[in-house]
Length: 174
Image (cartoon, rainbow, N blue to C red; front, side, top):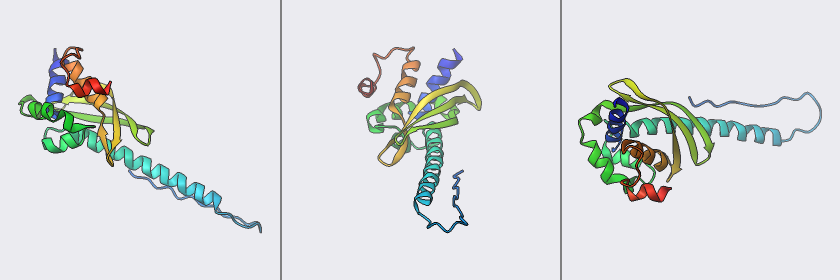
């Protein structure tokens, strides 16, 4: 099945604008000006900027994790609790198929300051083989990373839905 081959490939491969809005107000009244609206506007602007930066980092890191040209050590650092999966990532990285598989992120939605929903497609040789997959990115140690739940979900798909042979870290992740 082409999808299973592609999924194996992606796992092998991975084993594998910031917009700032300015807000201000002008007043022609003689009432004293307060800083509360500006502070609120500044916070909203900073929040929008932070969200855009987070979304940009999530997209870049997610695609780097699934990029066969990204060094294995970097891929490990881009996976939540990546050291627990180092042996899996290293083993899969040596496959020839791994060099043909990548991911394309099409949407990132921040769920909280520490979690985001990622919509992505798995590509093989530039062709989409697993479109519109949903994953999770997590903010860990100052970096947005591919969530363990997403990685373990892909591992389970690769194993025909069976979770019994997944790494212990997948079972601990729930």
